[in-house]
Length: 119
Length: 111
Image 1 (tube, rainbow over the protein chains, first blue to last red):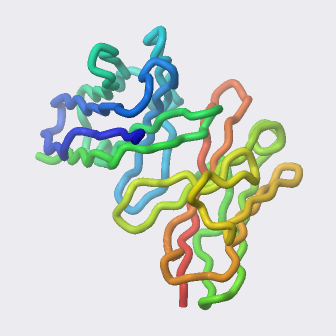
Image 2 (cartoon, helix red, strand yellow):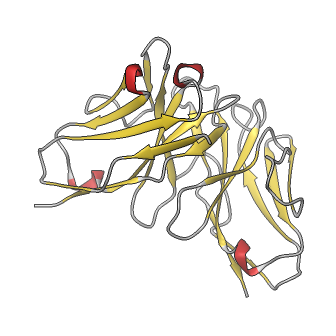
């Protein structure tokens, strides 16, 4: 079955970096774009952007430029989200989501990765 | 503040019909499809409605979506306790600075 499996929770200090992985299975990885969505504690969903899994070209939403990097390793059907220079306000659950048939048509979603930034 | 506006909460008793609204603008709902996601407590969001009013296989027909102009609605009929969750609308936005947008979410309580 189609599924996205993300890496486990992370606890990082301010200023450090983190890399979250999202491994796809059950479909041709390069046939669908991958999106990233953030959910801060007790808050709603926030679209971070997407990456073209054919070209590797990323598009970042406002507020997610500079410290956020989307990347791929197509040989292992995996997308990555790297966050540099972590801040306390980056504490959130990060989801990857396959873009199925159109913009913001996300199916399925990964299970989420909690990133906690604390000194 | 979210680009799409949803009521923060909604409630109903088992068997009732509940609707959740999602208000946007001409650059998002007015010109693009609307999607709805259900997030059960402690879990990842799940696609509930796509392209305004289509249900993925496996989603009960108690759930229905509609769109008119710059607003959309999710209706849940025959409310069940397991429907207690957060519901989010989403759309693409054609304006220069905003692309994918979500509503702020509506917490549905089954009384």
